[in-house]
Amino acid sequence: MENGESIEDDLDSSATEAFDQSTLSMKQQIKGTVQDIWQRPTRRPLPTAGDVVLCFEIPLARILPTGTAAGDGQSQSASGKKYVIYEVNVRKDGPGPDPYPTSVERRYTHFLKLYEGLRKEHPTQLQTVSFPKKVLMGNFTAELIGERSAAFECFLDHIVSVPLLRESPHFLEFLQGDELRNACQLLDERRNELAVPLLENCFRLLNKIFLDKSKCVLLLLCRLVAACTTSPIPHPSAEQWAELALRRYEHVCDTELLVLYIPLLQTCLHLWWQRGRDRTLLEERLNEMGKKGIKVKGGPTLAQAIHALDPRAETI
Image (cartoon, rainbow, N blue to C red; front, top):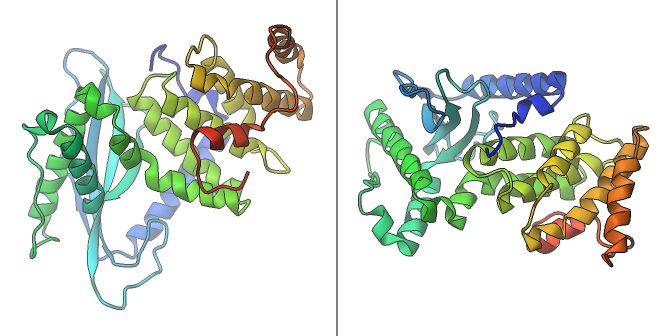
């Protein structure tokens, strides 16, 4: 992050704890149904120079029956086939471990798709990368899972160290693709309360990797604000995310992203009205833009403006 701003401090602690507890409970339920779990014998070492270092670590992997999705510990495969799901932990470690690590679950096929996409676009940038090959037998041995986990960690470390790879759409798809599609489907079904935790996790993950005002970070942040505010009753964290989005938009110069600013201000204005907050500052900002000839009324909603930049499945 550019300014060292703590995202977790912007959220209501009780809401964050509730989300963390529900996530832990879900993982415990899943673990109770799997046939095997591989765990990393030791955690990756902390930086020695006192710097803050972005770190990818796979602390565990689980063997699941085909047909079992993350969060669905009850589904069983009629064929008896299995696959390995790797928990990818993303941390910013300093003298101590990151107090707010973020994780996503990915299969070998996710890593392979990322590798093949990057190799096609930037072959010279991957010459030093050794990617684990497919195997026909022994996929579920602790030795192979451990070797693959270490290779995947090195692969991700390499990506973020090379700007061309880090900014690739293939990497962004790997980081958020599945979760964002699931969240947008839930929004389409008006199940915002289930979509918000997915978007929160995506935002925290991207925010560790990209700059505060990066397009992908601001776009996801605005999508999160929209998800929190389009329900009949705003999400408990709606104000915190909206305040963060307003702060992030200060001094944004990207013309493409500025099309979200008016809808964001309008969304915050309505939210402030619902919560009985002083709206003077927001109204002044909108009036200033109106005096400059910028259309501030009758424009798209925040969700519609987001969809115009990044069309997804959700209904607008």
